[in-house]
Amino acid sequence: MADPSLQSLLRATSRSFYLTLRTLPRAIRPPIALAYLLARTTDTIADTELVAVQSRLLALAALRDRILGASSAALDFGALAQSQASPAERALLGRCEEALSLLNHLPAEDRQRVRDVLSVITSGQELDLQRFAAATPPKLAALETDAELDDYTWRVAGCVGEFWTRSCRARLFPDAPVDEAVLLRDGVRFGKGLQLVNILRDIPADLRKGRCYIPRQTLGRAGLAPEDLLRPTNEPRFRALYHALLDHAASHLRAGWNYTRALPRGQWRLRLACAWPVLLGVRTLRQLRRENVLDPARRVKVPRAQFYAIIARTILLSPFPSAWNAQFDRELGVHRKVGTAGRDSVAS
Image (cartoon, rainbow, N blue to C red; front, side):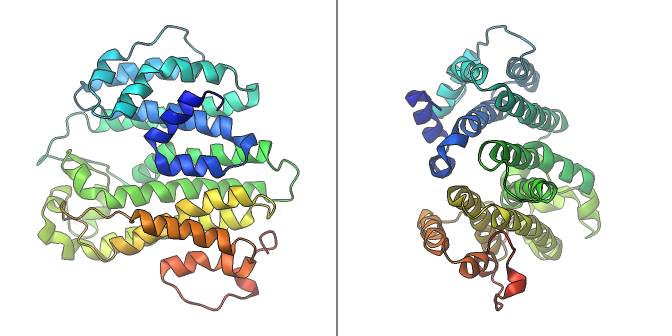
């Protein structure tokens, strides 16, 4: 992203992602950064609870049309901006036209990939707003089925894994001998896993907004209803089901780790940028297993010092394939001897 002021805006809206962006090879930064900035803008619109749902849906639709090139009408998000407590989010909305201008200057293939992923993301945000439009505790609105949860994680994060993979493949290693179908599959699961970690961490906060992302179908198998999750004393009844969901998130993140290992060894910056969110996600899962996740007073967050330790360790281990490959199981708490079966031919 060429505009220094928009770079500072990106840093203000997400310090951890900004660090990832600065680690990526320069060739891939413009489309990734711009897609992230636009996605944060749409997310800010969707999350502005002081504004009526219908007004947010109209604003999302107007921005989506501009992103997709279906409209050239000027956007004015002044009222939405005034409802933001964060100066960075106010700036995001106020400077939306600058980001859209940068989109128009991307090469055609990059621009289309950004448009494709933002189309899916905004569809997920719109569905979310419609699904929970009337939600207020103690009367909760909930996803109904496991398929709905999987679809939601695809729309808001799995599609990002696909976008990331197609963009990096095109710009960084178009001729490398990788199994593209497997890479795309694992990239989608990578994104889904990160989103599922967020959902499983944020259950109390979502419930107190009237939202339950744990499907009724899933809860019913444990004899629970969404309203039961409002009471922390029900955690023992929820625990086995919750740990099964943590296992499911871990299986997605393992696919993300396989993704990282399958990237060409020469793409060490890209490998690092992918490894950090996977390992941070796994560490978060380990902490969640030790907490009463229904207690709203105990929100799990990995301390910044531990995140920096993950960064330092991955950098130090990057030249050593066996030690690099073993990091996922180390974070997961699985101790095993790493041999030939623990490696892949590309990463070794």
